[in-house]
Length: 600
Image 1 (tube, helix red, strand yellow):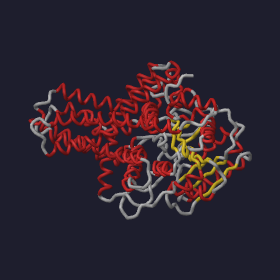
Image 2 (image 1 turned 135 degrees about the vertical axis):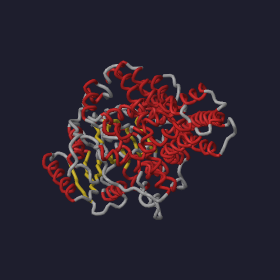
Image 3 (image 1 turned 90 degrees about the vertical axis):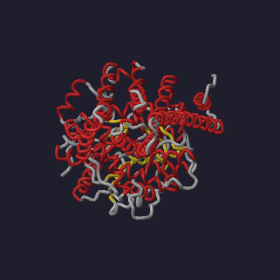
Image 4 (image 1 turned 45 degrees about the vertical axis):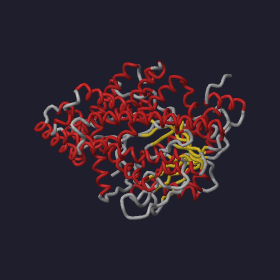
């Protein structure tokens, strides 16, 4: 067999039972990272040069220098997302079903028929979640594994941090019923009396209490569920790869009823497909940890991944809210690999039911990621891991930077002389380039589907994929400024000392009320009206350029409400708009409720 690169070499060695050539693999990873760095450096330099040229006519004034600074902060994620997507599509078209093994060679070391000999704990941390929904999802995981020959090697732990006595009583009753009805499985319930460290503290208490009992553990969120095939596959890969400390599965959405969630998860699914494959190509052994649906080697985690409490009293102090990527960084510092399986499987989660719920989740993640500012100097981190922490910060800096750029552009519109040397064609061309790069992950993910008869059929055919893709992109353009503005206000609040707590997420609802939408989104609406009035007064010509953002702001409240109206969800389901494969072929591991009302 001819060797053409990393994956074939690994495949040949796996088939012969050889130990991989670690020096050659390390050299390949270094070469990939250097190529990726060069591509992004050249791309960002080109875009920044283009913006400097556009703003330099008439001289660069103070406002324009501020715009350039804000624009620069948006470039890393714009460029990285673009190249991740391009590389992911190339890998998929070139290697097909073998593409995941090309970037995660450990997948080639198992045939998926090997005996499973390691013990795994599957854990679900809960805090004031809907107990009926979350435990029903957990039971679905257990039912799936019960039909395999390896069920005895899995235990199930409900780890409660619930502070509401009524919810806690419901949890205990439901777990007791589960235990009584399922004598063939070991099911445990533990409720902490204090909530030190939130979710990461909950997990830490578990791994210390159960030291020595398990080889691996697999945390699930209250809204996640996994089928037996992917769980067994992950265990086999970890068994065969003692250097892997964390193995993350690609998580996709489940069928939903609201128009918002159906559109959101359709776009997220396509956006993540090529993006994750491309990022795994260069991240390699410094991959992601998203905090759930990830298999973790328990003893190294206990020894090396306990999180520090950040000193002080400000919003970036205290317990780390976004624990996942920090744990991955500590695992990598300890010498273990963090890898991802960059392909769709029966690894799922339920996405937020409305834009308001999505924003609330984003704000908590924003607060947590900003805490990484205090962790960048941790000693001993590999350079790629330190860069990932920096990128996690920039992910939530780019949205406020974009909003600052937009607002300053509106202010600059009152000085038309600054734009006299820029033709409309040049301005539109530059804007089109930026939009194409921003949409590249979704476009490349859609291209992966359209390039395959088999994949297209799972979505109902190419016509449905194209229609859904166009509709989702338009819907995404309508809601993206709303989310970015909310993040901007929150970052300003962080600078002023505001912090956020750890509350249960709203994972299902019948619809979003007008009053709730108005309370959450009135700043966007007011800003949109003021901006529209300002542009109409000083530069009516700019209204056409600003229309997408102005419409997004002004229509924020009605769009938020109507996108959760049951009629919209029923209509999109009836015509197959935004259908995902699970809409047509429900998961084999059993029914998963997602629409039960929240407990009073």
